[in-house]
Every structure is written in structure tokens, then in C-alpha cells.
Length: 204
Image 1 (cartoon, rainbow, N blue to C red):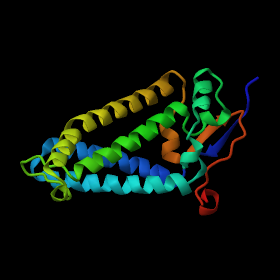
Image 2: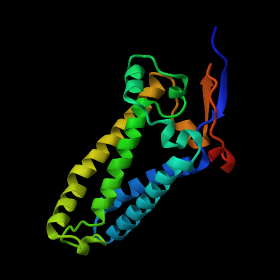
Image 3: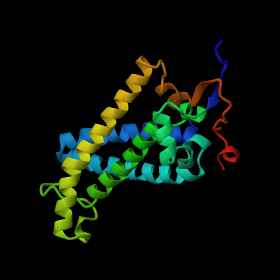
């Protein structure tokens, strides 16, 4: 006998808007960096937009909806071990499970590093970060190298892994991870877990 499923609100509206705006800005920053030239003006604009979104997410990770708060997917080592042993809790199937949580935190860290290095980078052609004049040449050189190589490839790897995980869950587990990030709702089977509503009272 299968457990009855219930639909709950998982991702609140601000989190969903953050996610898709971040996707658009990342795509825009990648495209403009490849075009170069005058397009670098837009590259910086996308970069500042990403910085603004990241700042919002850090705040929203504290005061946002239940499943958007960092506290809901900041797992202790023992919990992670039990999850990989197949001893996960019902809520692991609602918001971010331990593996998904690790990818979220990694993405945030590397995006912050990429934005931070970008504002002090100098490609010695036309693009100079707005704060490059306030740090040493050695720091600018390190930041530029990181921004154009290590940081970029690390983010590409994380994005590819993210997309592969989405495909795996969709085809192998019949679990559509994209739909809840569009409409906010997820069908949860046999688990009594609270939702994350789109109102200030529930978030706070």
C-alpha cells in the first residue's frame, strides 16, 4: 500500500526569483565574457547583479521561508553519513538533501569568490575591475588568474554537476526538481513536514 502524497510549498517566491535571475545573470556574464570588447560593460553589470543576488541570498538564508533557510540544510557530519547509508529523514526529500546542500554551499562560495576576484581583475586590454586600483599589482595578477581560469572552471564543473544531478533525478528517480523551482510546490509522499509559505509571518 502506497503512502498518500500531499502537496506543500517548498520554495518561496523570493527564492524562486533569486534562482532564475541568477541563472540569467550567469548566462549573460558567460556570453559577454566570450564576446569581449564593448560587451564587457555588460559583463560587469551582470557581475554586479550576481553580487546583489548573492547578498540577498545570504540574508534570505536567515530570514526566508523554512526550506530556504540555511538552518534547514546545514547538516551535521553524522547526519550526512546516515544519509549515504540510506538512513535519511523524511525532510531530506523535501528541501535540499545533504548532497544537494553541499552543492548549494559550494556554488555560493565559488560565486562569491568569482565576483570578488572580478572586481579587482585587470586583463591589461580593456576590462579593469572597479577596485583593482586599491590593491597591489600582485593581488590583481592573482585575482585575474583565478577569475579567468580556476574560478571559471570550478563554476563550470559545479554547474555541469548540477545539471547532471537534475537529469539523474528526473530520469532515474522520476523526481522533477525543476518544477518546484518554478511553481514552488512539491508532492511529498507519506511525510508530515511543514511547508514554506509565501507570506512574511511564515518566513519569520
